[in-house]
Image (cartoon, rainbow, N blue to C red; front, side, top):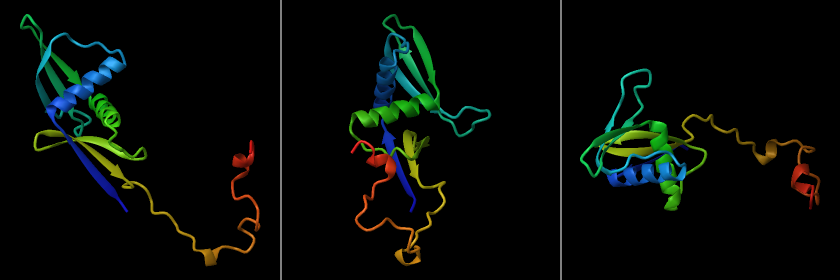
Length: 145
Protein backbone atom coordinates (compact mmCIF):
# COMPACT_ATOMS: atom_id res chain seq x y z
CA UNK A 1 0.00 0.00 0.00
CA UNK A 2 1.22 3.48 -0.81
CA UNK A 3 0.16 6.61 1.01
CA UNK A 4 0.15 10.25 -0.05
CA UNK A 5 -0.74 13.17 2.24
CA UNK A 6 -0.83 16.84 1.37
CA UNK A 7 -0.78 19.62 3.93
CA UNK A 8 -1.57 23.02 2.41
CA UNK A 9 -0.26 26.06 4.32
CA UNK A 10 -1.34 29.69 4.23
CA UNK A 11 1.29 32.39 3.78
CA UNK A 12 0.85 33.38 7.44
CA UNK A 13 1.57 29.81 8.56
CA UNK A 14 4.69 29.64 6.38
CA UNK A 15 5.98 32.94 7.79
CA UNK A 16 5.25 31.86 11.37
CA UNK A 17 6.96 28.49 10.83
CA UNK A 18 10.09 30.02 9.27
CA UNK A 19 10.42 32.77 11.89
CA UNK A 20 9.87 30.33 14.77
CA UNK A 21 12.53 27.98 13.39
CA UNK A 22 15.04 30.79 12.84
CA UNK A 23 14.52 32.02 16.41
CA UNK A 24 14.90 28.50 17.78
CA UNK A 25 18.22 27.85 15.98
CA UNK A 26 19.36 31.43 16.75
CA UNK A 27 19.71 32.36 13.07
CA UNK A 28 19.71 36.05 12.16
CA UNK A 29 16.45 37.74 11.22
CA UNK A 30 16.04 41.11 9.52
CA UNK A 31 14.18 43.66 11.63
CA UNK A 32 10.77 44.65 10.31
CA UNK A 33 7.44 43.28 9.17
CA UNK A 34 6.95 40.66 6.47
CA UNK A 35 5.03 42.46 3.75
CA UNK A 36 5.08 39.82 1.01
CA UNK A 37 5.68 36.09 0.51
CA UNK A 38 6.56 34.75 -2.93
CA UNK A 39 7.44 31.27 -4.18
CA UNK A 40 9.33 30.38 -7.32
CA UNK A 41 11.28 27.55 -8.87
CA UNK A 42 14.89 28.60 -9.48
CA UNK A 43 16.53 27.70 -12.76
CA UNK A 44 19.45 25.32 -12.55
CA UNK A 45 20.40 21.82 -11.53
CA UNK A 46 17.39 21.26 -9.26
CA UNK A 47 14.31 22.39 -11.19
CA UNK A 48 11.86 20.83 -8.70
CA UNK A 49 13.08 22.93 -5.76
CA UNK A 50 10.92 25.80 -4.55
CA UNK A 51 12.55 28.92 -3.18
CA UNK A 52 10.56 31.02 -0.73
CA UNK A 53 11.18 34.78 -0.69
CA UNK A 54 10.09 36.96 2.19
CA UNK A 55 9.94 40.71 1.60
CA UNK A 56 10.54 42.50 4.90
CA UNK A 57 9.86 46.21 5.41
CA UNK A 58 11.41 47.93 8.43
CA UNK A 59 10.07 50.97 10.32
CA UNK A 60 12.00 53.38 8.06
CA UNK A 61 10.51 51.90 4.88
CA UNK A 62 13.67 50.07 3.81
CA UNK A 63 12.89 46.79 2.07
CA UNK A 64 14.94 43.64 2.62
CA UNK A 65 14.37 40.44 0.67
CA UNK A 66 15.17 37.13 2.36
CA UNK A 67 15.55 34.07 0.12
CA UNK A 68 14.99 30.72 1.82
CA UNK A 69 16.03 27.35 0.38
CA UNK A 70 13.54 24.52 0.16
CA UNK A 71 15.29 22.47 2.86
CA UNK A 72 14.95 25.24 5.45
CA UNK A 73 11.27 25.81 4.70
CA UNK A 74 10.55 22.07 4.76
CA UNK A 75 12.25 21.72 8.15
CA UNK A 76 10.33 24.73 9.45
CA UNK A 77 6.98 23.34 8.30
CA UNK A 78 7.69 19.91 9.80
CA UNK A 79 8.58 21.59 13.13
CA UNK A 80 5.42 23.72 12.83
CA UNK A 81 3.29 20.57 12.43
CA UNK A 82 5.04 18.85 15.33
CA UNK A 83 4.41 21.88 17.54
CA UNK A 84 0.71 21.69 16.75
CA UNK A 85 0.59 17.92 17.31
CA UNK A 86 -0.19 17.13 13.69
CA UNK A 87 1.06 13.55 13.26
CA UNK A 88 3.72 13.11 10.60
CA UNK A 89 5.22 9.72 9.73
CA UNK A 90 8.96 9.58 10.43
CA UNK A 91 9.73 7.05 7.69
CA UNK A 92 8.40 9.13 4.80
CA UNK A 93 9.58 11.48 2.09
CA UNK A 94 8.60 15.11 2.57
CA UNK A 95 8.69 17.51 -0.39
CA UNK A 96 7.38 21.00 -1.09
CA UNK A 97 5.08 21.68 -4.02
CA UNK A 98 2.99 24.62 -5.16
CA UNK A 99 -0.70 23.78 -5.53
CA UNK A 100 -2.92 26.64 -6.70
CA UNK A 101 -0.33 29.15 -5.48
CA UNK A 102 -0.22 27.72 -1.94
CA UNK A 103 2.84 26.03 -0.47
CA UNK A 104 2.06 22.35 0.11
CA UNK A 105 4.01 19.78 2.10
CA UNK A 106 3.59 16.50 0.24
CA UNK A 107 4.27 13.40 2.34
CA UNK A 108 4.71 10.03 0.62
CA UNK A 109 5.09 6.63 2.26
CA UNK A 110 6.17 3.33 0.68
CA UNK A 111 6.62 4.79 -2.81
CA UNK A 112 10.25 3.65 -3.15
CA UNK A 113 10.14 0.45 -1.09
CA UNK A 114 9.98 -3.03 -2.53
CA UNK A 115 7.02 -5.11 -1.38
CA UNK A 116 7.68 -7.30 1.65
CA UNK A 117 7.75 -11.05 1.30
CA UNK A 118 5.20 -12.58 3.64
CA UNK A 119 6.05 -16.04 4.98
CA UNK A 120 3.07 -18.17 5.94
CA UNK A 121 3.08 -20.39 9.04
CA UNK A 122 2.98 -23.62 6.99
CA UNK A 123 6.16 -22.78 5.06
CA UNK A 124 8.38 -22.41 8.15
CA UNK A 125 10.67 -25.29 9.08
CA UNK A 126 10.00 -27.30 12.24
CA UNK A 127 13.20 -26.17 13.92
CA UNK A 128 13.09 -22.51 12.89
CA UNK A 129 10.68 -21.23 15.55
CA UNK A 130 11.42 -20.62 19.23
CA UNK A 131 11.17 -23.54 21.60
CA UNK A 132 7.85 -23.82 23.47
CA UNK A 133 7.90 -21.85 26.70
CA UNK A 134 11.06 -19.92 25.79
CA UNK A 135 11.32 -16.15 26.01
CA UNK A 136 10.32 -14.71 22.61
CA UNK A 137 12.47 -11.60 23.00
CA UNK A 138 15.80 -11.43 21.24
CA UNK A 139 18.96 -12.08 23.30
CA UNK A 140 19.76 -8.37 23.25
CA UNK A 141 16.39 -7.57 24.80
CA UNK A 142 16.76 -10.21 27.55
CA UNK A 143 19.93 -8.63 28.98
CA UNK A 144 19.01 -6.50 31.96
CA UNK A 145 15.73 -8.28 32.71
